[in-house]
Length: 470
Ligand code: FCB
Image (cartoon, rainbow, N blue to C red):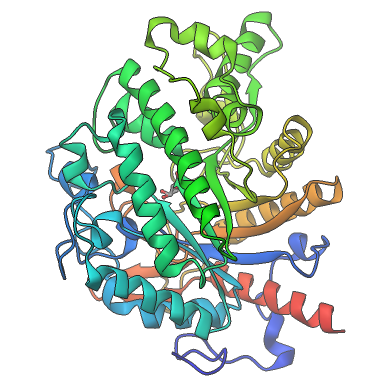
């Protein structure tokens, strides 16, 4: 741990040099309240490695990565960024950037290897050290319980398709609440339940790799139900931590003004946004999507919707790009004229403002909103000087943070913004081919090199501190 903001990895800057990178000029021109939190985000499977160490059980991602063809570069999170061993250095790095918060996730099978039965003290102790380390560096810990790495033993019993998994998740949430709930600033139940349901159970491109629309709909219901029941259990513990959930959301625009494209945009918005937001905040599923699902609509038991609609303290939003709907699926981002990231996603910061403003208008019940992930993958070659001059990512962050500032200006109750991601890491089905980090990772040596975007983010945060003091 470092006693100050100095890190051996970053050049120590004199006050005059503190905006040497130019910071994030567009973002710096916006106003953010003093209690607005800026942070960085990661998730357990993507960075920890140590997949079988100290009693950890296998997760569905450990299993999925071993399926031939599942991961673009045939890799896995077995080693990843070796964060399990390098966490202190990584926390020093976050501190040196001046981030106020670190959003990370707990690997469920590391703390309860089969999702049932005995807890693993070594795993619990790891997260306790991590959280203590975050706090000792003057930062806030934002904990996510489920960033997709379900214990494989629970998958063997039906996974999220089985209602019993809801009970297991509530036990897990309560256990983590008891162990860490007084030390963390915030607990999110799930990260992006749409991804788990849709990509994990309908298209099958993510773990557990199933292709069954009816199952996917049931999974989404169980995820929501487990969220509500976990919030109830955590609330009963009277913790100081704020409680909420993280959704992946995008505004969906019709590709043309035709009635067919507009109708498609409404349905797509229903599947992505209203399917989750309506039960969370209004106590029902959207009728148009239920109709669209027909016989594949989930089995909902009496009382479930009331359980899902627990009051929460915050809604986390992961935003990467806009969505475009065309009735004949002819829209192609490659020809939209917008710049694209290395994932092929359009760069559209206005979409983030539009999204936040419309969420606040349609769901005033969501009392505080956070951008819990935002960032871009870019090719990021290491230059001859050993640095990574990622001007594209710096610009992405600059314009998107400014977009959050615009939403604030329009009255949206924003609480914070977290960059995805601190480190280059295991990007799920893309393996290590896509780099989202503001810090470069050389996977052969595990060397971390802050990219220009990290230095610009640091300088932006320094400028903010200086102006609030002055
Ligand atoms: C989000 C995930 C995160 C990361 C980014 C790029 O959907 O929550 O783990 O993969 O996308």
